[in-house]
Length: 204
Ligand SMILES: N[C@@H](CCC(=O)N[C@@H](CS)C(=O)NCC(=O)O)C(=O)O
Image (cartoon, rainbow, N blue to C red):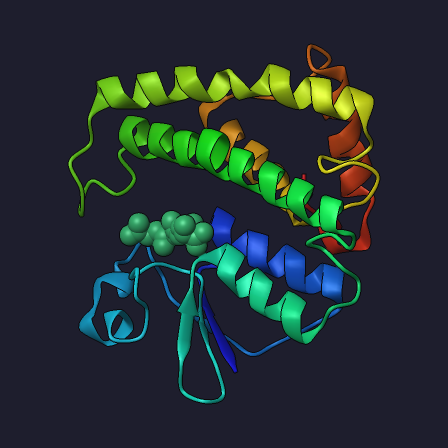
């Protein structure tokens, strides 16, 4: 088994945090996406979406999409459970995971890519879409604040993969100077609590 990754990127960090929470360590191979390693034919023969992270399995199969990779590790190493335990908790984790993915990570990702033009070597950057995506992303913050005011973690009482996703999403937002400060007291406190977890040590 081998994980192809660019460690500094958000979706690779998401898988690394998930593995650290599970207490797992697996071999890794560096793919430098900024240098365009993921655009090469060799990598595209392995990865369906041509992106990192991509996991190579021992049977020669490859999995991409960070949440699919996390799901795979959840299935083969169920403890500690990070996708929920009861029926209802699993559904809640899925709900928050999708909200964070679709209303958060997608939008802040588009805002970063279109405003900073980091990948202008491989895509058309549209500044207006960057501004609009950022505006839409900001609308998620009151929803997060309300949820984390009422519950210690996004899906309720237990830490889950949805918290990991929200953490990397807010880390992405700092690239566009969106800092979670006292204007968002519950998100701020949740972030501080999460950073105390051993898996998150050293991540500001
Ligand atoms: N939905 C995918 C997104 C993967 C993704 O966007 N990966 C970025 C790094 S965080 C990448 O490979 N970027 C290189 C590129 O866009 O060419 C996932 O969750 O794995």
